[in-house]
Amino acid sequence: MSRIHEPSVEQVFIRPRYLAGPGDPTWVTTALHRASGWSYGHGPLLARVLLASPDQQALLHLEPEPDQPWWVIRHARTASTPAWQASFGARTPAEIIAAFTDALTDPATPSAGGSPYEPLRAAGWQPARDHSGLTSPDGTVQVEHFTETGSGTWFIDVAISGDPEGLIWRAQLGTGTPTHLIPAVTRALADPSPLPRDPQRLPPLGQDRMHTSIRQLPAADVAFALELRIDALISRSPCPRHPAAPPGLAVQPRTHRSR
Image (tube, rainbow, N blue to C red; front, side, top):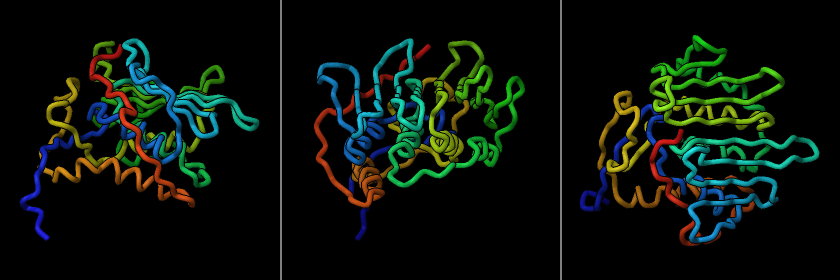
């Protein structure tokens, strides 16, 4: 059946994806709640989201703090693993954060995941000039594993210049972060496929380094993209469940500079 008369909406597809801007936070928050059973405890009048894993070991905190990372995932210490924390800045694309949380909540037994640098090398990233990590082909992203003084933190900096005003977003995956979660993020960074965005919400920084294309998509496809994502995540479980979505689960972050 032809879809020629169906309503459509304009979307801008942006690559590289790490410059696409934050996108829709429900790509992370609603997916965690409905597909993985994370409970929410924030008040409806608060500009923040708090989600806790079913075992109460992990907490996601999303809050518009100008001087702090907007996204923080903390995991408590267990009998076999230390406590750890990962954070992402306000302009981090939700799809990159989702790669992390999807791997965290995957019910399958995690594999080692390989070296986090391998997806980047395969995508043409080169050794950095001033540290031991890798740099994206356009010179915008620096990824480094900081191992001095016993630390094991991974740093991701996306910037158009070396001064603070040029920083677009930063992520820190702290010491103790499970090893399979780091490659999930670097694969998302290296993924060459563009990310769709609302033309009215293009990110202000890095536009001269973006490659964009405009497409008309069926409105239904755009409206139900999150539902399809949730269904795919639910299908990973041997006992799928379909909880209802409560209204107003997530806050939409504003796209302003974080320092």
